Image: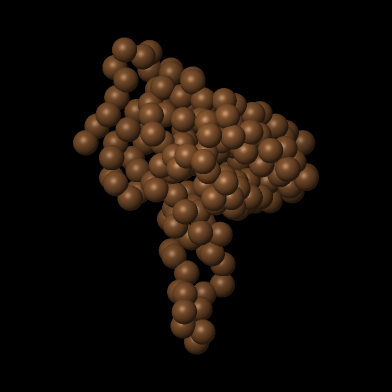
Length: 170
């Protein structure tokens, strides 16, 4: 299935294939609110406050805001901690979010090393003898999300992680 905003110029489209539904989707992302900052762990509260503010404007439930805050922490801290080489002076990151129909979109972009977190195998859970080390954060993100997609934009050198969650109203 392909959903596309054909009336939009190519530069305003972002095309993705979502992991759970396998839907190919091209969306106009210009109506989402955006925050640009340097990817530093100490900026997590700025990112969290920004996303929570947008979600409150939309009227999302407290439970949904709490779940998405876990996603924000896991994804943003990983970007700030691992996307860029240690000591890199310029560490741009962008967070975009908002409502698209009945869905909440949360998009993380960075210009760090190309890395698809969705390729990480899910950890072994429940079997103490075979538990894996690492991978629990992205597993939580995938579990919380209704759908999720990763794309590396070679033209702009950006990692783009898009998370969708059905809006739960307060």
